[in-house]
Image (cartoon, rainbow, N blue to C red; front, side, top):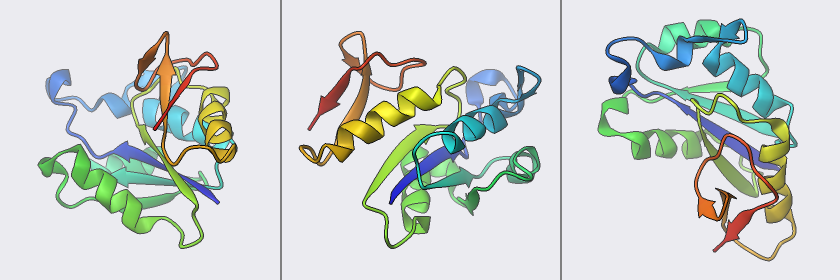
Length: 147
């Protein structure tokens, strides 16, 4: 089983008071678009970690087959959300993919590339990459870094 933890607890501090995850993109809230894309991937389960404006994020995800975990300490940073997400994955999970909730242009193919590279069984950690740099790209070429 492959789990995806989508990080959606941050305060969007650079957005000056508005929650970027609730911004409309292609006619829907950004977080809904990212979660729908993740659900279209080869991932077996999707967990969304909420924090700041949790109820608004939950409302944006109504009807989607994902689990929501609440990070009551989201102000302690992204690592606190990762910990909450990891504590909520299924016992049978073999691997976890961590995905920021604000990757508006991510597609299921890109998520699948990371999952497929991991499934080859050669590496314990696979990091997404694009144009020779590791990180969360908006679109991957068949480029992953192994650790």
